[in-house]
View 1: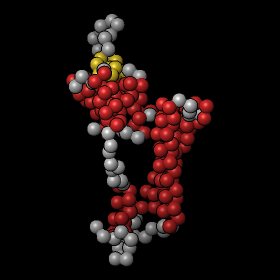
View 2: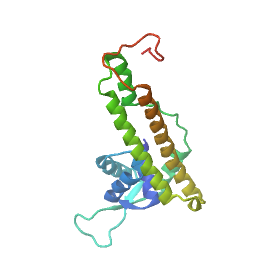
View 3: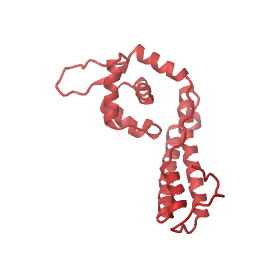
View 4: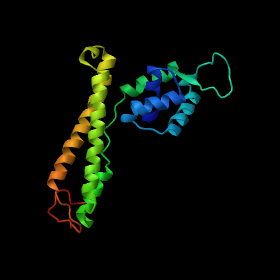
Length: 193
């Protein structure tokens, strides 16, 4: 249910066309809540049908002109109710961690290269987040509550990327030579399925 709320948030920040919204997702919201362009356009239609948003009238009607959307009071109320609701954390799902667990049984040929690739990707994402923080959130700009909240979201991303960089660095140091044909041992931590 979070994609419609992400769209409502983005539209309340700035009324946008579907194309502008997809670009904004690619540059900001998509860092922590990804969606394809098709999903965004499909959700815009559902939000409009539910009376949460509307397309702004075009100054000059033209065929093929992009619609710009704004949030209606019902959409703002929906978003406010969602913000106030409680939600339990979701369990972590990681194909990489599952792949490592499988390598304990069938061997880890190629696993080291995958760990190194993930480390490079997380380091690159961390660098990008730090650049965004330096550019968009200098200490002087963090005085208003909306800016502090946006900065806290970014800090969450920074901290997660720092976790992954640290963990992957540790994993690579622990497994200097990942051998093929590994076998699981009953004494391994977390060996039960």
